[in-house]
Length: 76
Image: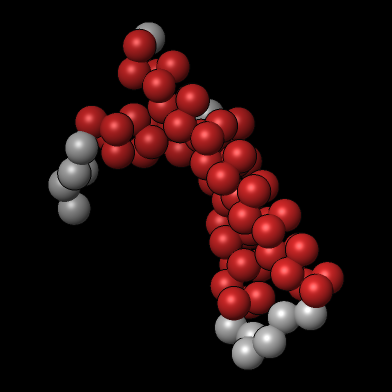
């Protein structure tokens, strides 16, 4: 399968070569899975709603960290 963009090529390279990027990718996937489980519920308690917001913020922070690594690799 061909790589769709230069940024995607950098992500693929980082997945193969950067333990930090791999860790962040795994964390992002774990958070995404947890959020999917929460959103599949018909009703969230107040505590679950707070947890959902917390997970979304963590997931976004991890994604930002991954993108910073992509930007650093692009400049290098």
